[in-house]
Image 1 (cartoon, rainbow, N blue to C red):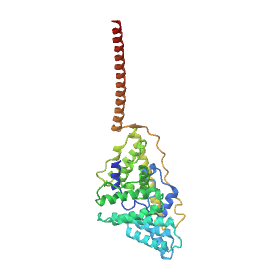
Image 2 (image 1 turned 90 degrees about the horizontal axis):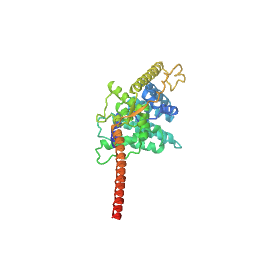
Image 3 (image 1 turned 135 degrees about the vertical axis):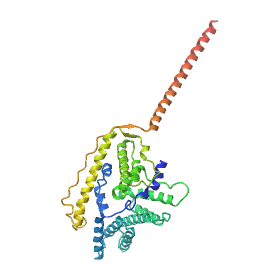
Image 4 (image 1 turned 180 degrees about the horizontal axis):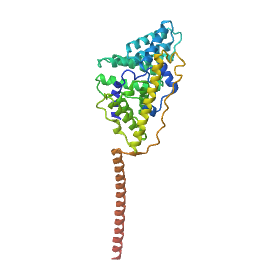
Length: 372
């Protein structure tokens, strides 16, 4: 468990520019659809939009606000679009404009107050990642304060990502500040961390981070070893394609696992089919989008944008894969337990036998004394 959180304290550095708690029109749409299951996540069957998508959205918002529009959603869309395009300073500027509108409302809007803090905190954290001076933690601390305020307003929002992000940022501040003593307490379970990381992969930039996938692998239990191994192969594939593992001292978390697929070949074959399906899904979707975007259409403004789009169908789930226990410590633990129990029984039987023999000898000795 200690090693689990040691890894957490450096994990946030892997999330690059798009792996935190942003909120825009796409986030709301994703919440309405719900998160994909883990097989869909491994396959990559979730929305990933090209830069042109965000450039066109930003152009639209600029024109609408320039014409006097003050809908709060517009500021979120513009801020997230700038951040997705790697421009956090502009993203923060959009949140400052939103703050001015919020302060002018006759009645508070708790939902948009929450979104304001979630986005602003995220943009500050992303700006910190773009700086060369890691010792200057001011943006990181400012971002943390805004995210914590967002959680106070809406504790259960955003698929649990904000709680995970806050826990990681707290550890990052502790790590980079050079503070002595123990790490700060973390109020996030492995299950919450797993769900939060899945949300970060789906809605953030950790899709191609070998370290994030490696860490996610360590959050799955014994019964999900086939999932662990598919994530392991995902990590290996990313590294082979040139994606760098930034946490060089982080071990392969599968070493802490208890099981592996009994038919590894069958599981590997399914994984290859799963990834191929995900690649076809993304290629099909992106080609369709770019053709429409280059023609001047955008989902924000054209209700018929997706007309004619045929989604690549998913493949079925694998049949239940039998598992076998392979962790040496576990096997030795079971072996030693058996020996221990056997030894105890042996000692008891021996003591009973000795006691019985002693009792018989005493009775025989007594009879002899009486006879004499």
